[in-house]
Image (cartoon, rainbow, N blue to C red; front, side, top):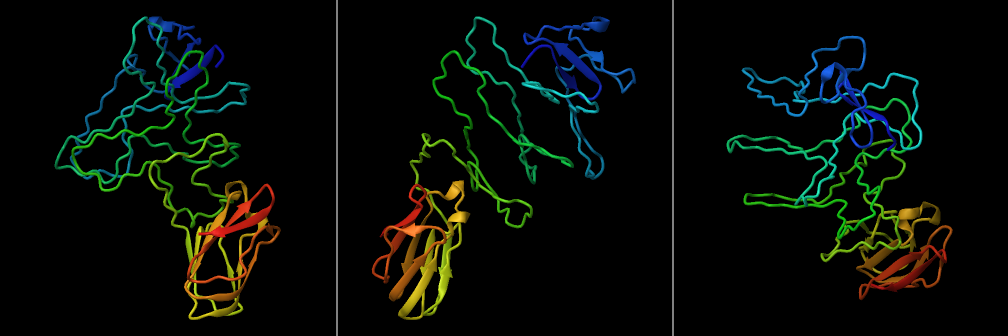
Length: 314
């Protein structure tokens, strides 16, 4: 971030400072260097912006309006452009340690929510809500929440970019460390990934088992083709009896994007399949099963380096 730069307190006031937090303008003798950012009077300016409190005691049923104690609103209404590290921010929380002390815990921005009435029920609570309220134009890259280390010339013993801590003496029904809802009904999304790890040197580590519920089931008859869905991990076949022939069509290579380069499908059948054919458009088979039975299943795994599927016992 280059100096000087600007941030706004709401729509009404602004503050100019350099990277060290030194005020560049101190009009009207205000110690916090607040000045009206426009010649039009936009309301009363409170010079004490460090603490605000609102006690809300409605006498009637609340409507659907939004009530808040503080608001930062940045109106961008100019032809001015930024470049390099330049950017716009509606609010900035900044903790800077320049003292000789050793703080036990430092927080750049803290959001807190308390429900101190034992008889009160909050239907839904969110300590911090990040919302993209509208977009009528084009956003190149949208990052709703971002954790960054932009400079470190010292030592960080352990970096937890996203950490969860829970202290509980009450009851929590279900706790999700991360949750990705079903967006299948949302149109206009070309590809969805709940999680992407683009670093080949950063394996996903878990001391607990990882459960995949991407099952597909079919009860085919002789001569049919069972098409395996792109997201299927396990295919269960339950024909009525022995099948003379059956074809299993695995996903085509063209559909195996970056997230499916190590795609594998485990197959189980309750009946004998005398002649089994396995296909995958655009890919070869180093080893392919020619028959299948209920004694033991098999696993087909795609190898993107050789553009081929391999088969092993389940």
